[in-house]
Image 1 (spheres, rainbow, N blue to C red):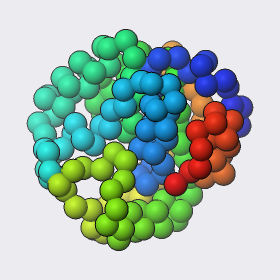
Image 2 (cartoon, one colour):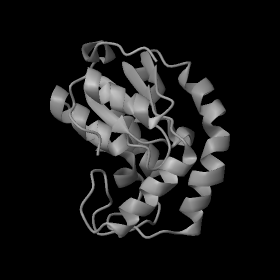
Image 3 (tube, rainbow, N blue to C red):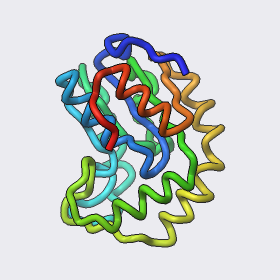
Image 4 (tube, rainbow, N blue to C red):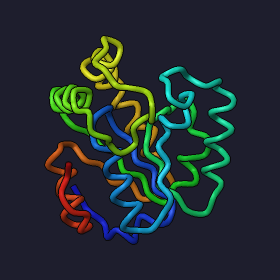
Length: 179
């Protein structure tokens, strides 16, 4: 994995990857280091305090408005609602990690009462079969298609293949410990 200088990613960075893969934590670490606003797409996709999806057109309009700004770090997927992210991002970080590691991290975050970065305030997170199926079967099947989509990004693309690669980014960019 090639690790570019952090400043080469520019002022508009999109972080994508599997559930429980470290997107939110990385986005917050980068946002703090670069002094850029951090946007968690789950917090826009769902009604406040719930896991009920907002109307698709309202979500897309909000994404387009956020993407039109001069500087941001956006973390999340929603490839059906790109809303200009691919065209406007000056840097894209694509996280990929083993599904069993993501599953373990998902269970751990569901069972910890502590606040985590990017969480849905007021919407508890408990293990559910929809999310388990997504992590273990559905999302891994879509990784190749997502990587093909991301290869069309105008900005610099950084792709990881493991949690060790993610740790290398933290170290190279002096972001502190991966948690």
